[in-house]
Length: 401
Image (cartoon, rainbow, N blue to C red; front, side, top):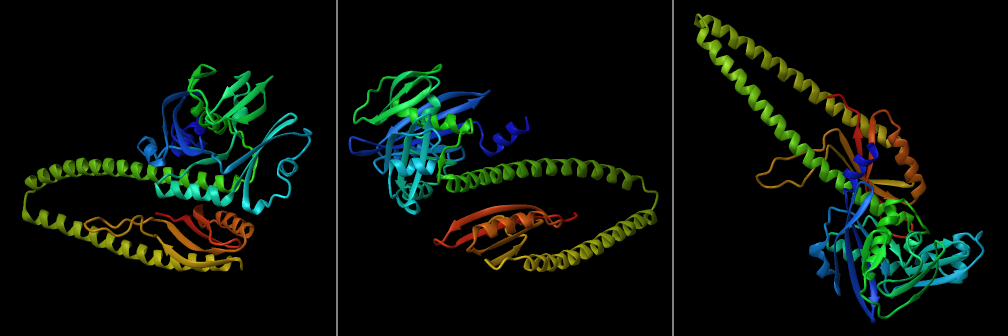
């Protein structure tokens, strides 16, 4: 039950598959929207376009988008290999002397059959940049036909895709070949009728929901994309929840105020003389003065604890991490005209550069174990060069109200 609640908050129940493929020497896009309900997938709609702009009105940016790159920029090769071969050996067998620093790869292996898909990192990064410019942050990316093996239990024989043809035998994907023209005839997958341009999108959504990772070097970038998307969902969910809570509290305060205001009027009308009214006023003034003194003490304590947090943070910074900025209770939003200034209370936001990812990870884990820190959120982690990356962390502090 808890897992379903977390998934609803971080992902929702709408999943969108986007395939980028080449058809007749021209790049095309196919979108499939599906709703996940009661452990079942239900197709909603699908769109095909020659440009990404044609699909934008049909993409819900707050719902997960799973992108499969199957264009001419992606090379695919079927090989027959020993079942004990590891992914690196299969990759080298399919594409000898490949410079892995410049390529992304994914390997799908079923028995003695394997499909190896590769693409230059600059090409995939270019696609992701185009999506980001349009406000789309995928939750996962995949290459070629890497996820088509998940349909092996539902299909026997040949299946036509957007620009390919795959063959299944005895529950395994055993062969594929490129096709320039494919029929628009629907195919039956379980109890669903899908078009060829929907197959890759459907396969990736099924693989994602079933948590079937592939052997590849996409884990890091997929992890970053997934965290970015989920953090944005949680932030949006939190803002809406906080707004709803604020309205409820505001309504409650109004009702309470109205109740006590009416009671106070009745009390005032029943006061026997002016002396009693004066006594009540003095008591209220004493309470206000007492609360003001308590607020001043709390404010002084806050400033003192801020310096303490900065000192503690500085004591544990590794040499490979260079801090560039620290903000205590940063702004939730930029200052806007005629809008209240909102702070992220009980939080400390730090930003900087690291040249050692492992040390940075250990440092972040070490921070999360500190008794004065409740949670560490990685808001941003982006490579600025081959040896360094910029980061932004948000530390949620353990502070008494």
